[in-house]
Image 1 (spheres, rainbow, N blue to C red):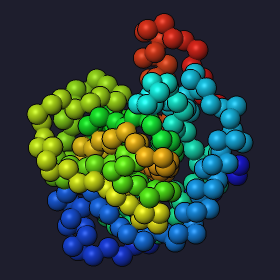
Image 2 (image 1 turned 45 degrees about the vertical axis):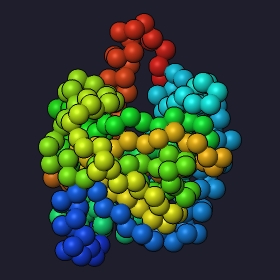
Image 3 (image 1 turned 135 degrees about the vertical axis):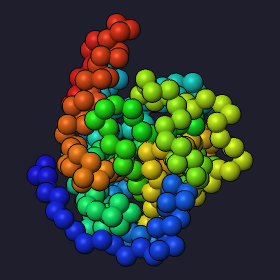
Length: 266
């Protein structure tokens, strides 16, 4: 696929109230951000990926992630990470001028795409325990944030994301030597959670330090969501290729300690 080039774009219009809410809470919800037909196109292509690239779906492929089905106990495929080199529709969403402008308005400067993934979460799949997305590597940008773009209606039944406002101000709250590590109990007031119940066209944005979690998909519906993530231009610039090189190296080193040495990226 021919990849487009990121260019500097004007800031999107966000109100002072929205920017203040972002600063205070560590997340922001924008309803009706994309047209429904734009999301429908991306959703259709997401389904095609499962057929067109079925040869990529393997436990040793670092692009793929698997999760437990809470009904059957089986491990099922759930995620392509990265995905924009497979999907033109996701590529267009990640580098959409409106989205880059909005993230740039939150940064106060140009936003750079850092990573991207699509999580399918079919019926029965487990969610994720309370955690923060920030990875404590020397090269990992503290300005890291993620945009949640749902392709389906997301609610409690199919395991919507739940965020905990204000705690992003505390920085990293998990042990500093992990990839994905559930936050220790008792660090936050779990009654303060906000469930991100969204429709196609809506988006939610949250910082890398915003604690969040998701429940299992107990519905008969899929919960397909696209997650592009960004950093400030002044904090490393355009570094997506370097990020994935480091990420894959760290994964190989981690799994090699337990004797798993067959990882590859395709």
